[in-house]
Length: 171
Image 1 (cartoon, one colour):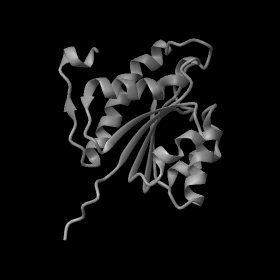
Image 2 (cartoon, helix red, strand yellow):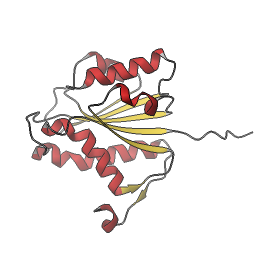
Image 3 (cartoon, one colour):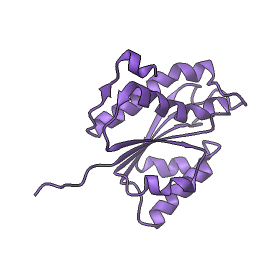
């Protein structure tokens, strides 16, 4: 008998939009939502700098895709992808100013037996974390590639993405 349970995917954008490139994860999920009509099994979540408030939203997800600014020692604007067993190693290195909250959330989900089945992080190396609501030009140029990486991750998970018409995407 086929399963009647639907796959649940959460695309989580995290970061502080008040600190230039730190907000790239939030900007990425905003752009993803403008560019594609997403099916009901995909939830876009602006996590900002939230932490424990996200527990219920992330619990028991089949796939958690995180978009974030990640300091990995690469040239600014470089993209990085980490998946599954690579993600805990990311959390051991403090690569993002709000990371403590996110690692606490993920650890709490593990302890509660509610951890997402798979976790993938798509990040961009920041050029600046100065106070400003705009991304730096370097990271702004990387934003379309980050959005496409998130879309490709969804496609690899079997999600049929429907591009919005240009007039719809501008809204």
